[in-house]
Image 1 (cartoon, rainbow, N blue to C red):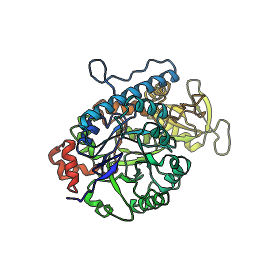
Image 2 (cartoon, rainbow, N blue to C red):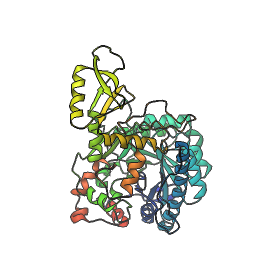
Image 3 (cartoon, rainbow, N blue to C red):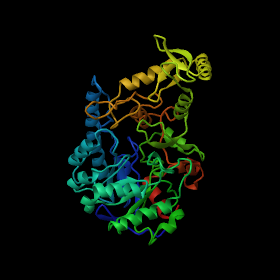
Image 4 (cartoon, one colour):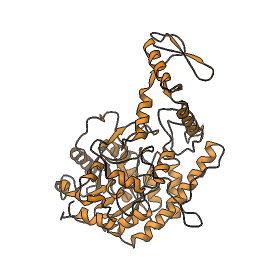
Length: 465
């Protein structure tokens, strides 16, 4: 057994074991309530959470608005209703034990409106809010207004310094903890900065030690740090426990709770997790958020990778080496490629990739007519799920646009995350996962395809395994 000492988190002494919140419908009231019932911290996703219809079945999120702005309002309404519902389910399933947190993304659509709506509608049911994907300066003020603790997700001491200096020092009483999310190991969107190399991971200990040193400078000696990303066996982190350099530590598990009976993901997704090998999860930058993210290598990501590889730079007038005419679009508009790139483009066209789509970087990508139609339809049907989207050029600002060309090298993230969360398709949709997901296949706890309950998983974690 690992000597886990309880910590005060969100106003109550609990096990320092935290369920990672994840995204759309991947952690819900059932899973987070079950985790809290064990005496830890359960976290449901407040990102477009599911809500029930009159019969109690999941209400499909169907959009009727004719404009992006109208569909955006529908999405916000769905998000608030779903978040309130999942908070109520989590509260009921917890049996008054542990703590219930909600996870939101600062770069999601109308993050502030959604937070206000859910926290107002679920007063007393949510004890803390974790928030990452961006720089959530205003999360402190919003959480404090509702008497809820806030937990920023950062990947460096520098990021936390900026948040503290700008806003958090004004609301220090409600800072429940700081989540350090390893940008090379965590699943989903990761906080790699431009100064960090995605191919050269740095060990987490010095980075967390630096974060604690900074927090001590701010008088946050006893504020817990949650280690997130790469945590599998607690025995591998034994030197982090009762470590005077690091101070109070909790451990957040994002990937392992996916494979539990209470986990809402599909059976196909659960079976897929049991087959992953090392290297099957990789960092990529296809997300329309512009952030790096970690996901399972499957046909969905392979198509995006191939799409970007079929790419050439173009000019609208002859310039430099761009002297070879090439005709694109229904009207056969002339652009200029290098002679070598024209040969490549003609070769792709012979393979069926006949449609040339412009990117914001003055390049063309080549796709099949069917894929081009899908890309255009997805861009047209945008419902504004992000604060700003590279794929559709949506922005929640006054103009409703980023002012840049829509980028066909990306994808509609709302569409694919809804699809993988509510279908059996795990090959042609985006599947986020942490880089340790391959360990399901070798961990004896999951031998012969065994899927534990949340309680069994937490009890197992307490042994160090």
